[in-house]
Length: 201
Image (cartoon, rainbow, N blue to C red; front, top):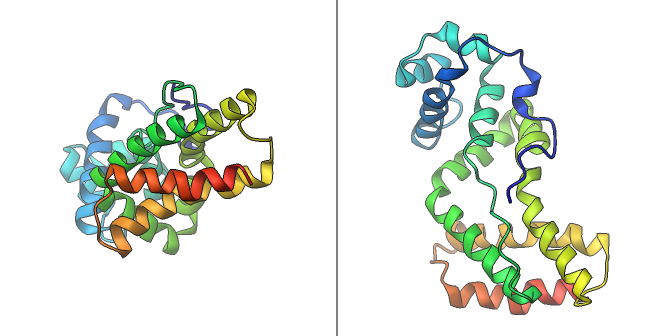
């Protein structure tokens, strides 16, 4: 259960092109080049060469680089799948964190390249915040709604907003700032000592 249509997509901001069949090659080129050379050095020429398409094909699909990159990232499926209902908030949180950790570890270089690019490119940042990142919140919303239905926690939108930023910050800090591995013992400590206390506050 992965929601991809919860908001207008980045591709909705560009007219439909005639060469959608080339999109997978272009997406693959973008996702390879971003962590290798960074957003600023990744030109349309470089993407066209890597994807073996013409620049005209790319410009018929997207008005510019930010739209192309956001669309490629939207199709990367960074969304954490909604875990099967484990019967408890703690179990659901652990299942979600395990999936999130795998994404963090496997795509760390790509994630860091995108975060860095968002700081210097307002248009890319807007597209990411409007059309790519919201889908990442859906699994945690489902988990919280389950817990509210079970009576494990009270409905509280202010706590929900705080919760959404905690897990990504802790996982990225563990990997990048501390340079340490994310193991299951760490994930359990995050759930027991951070996430559950916040949600039950």
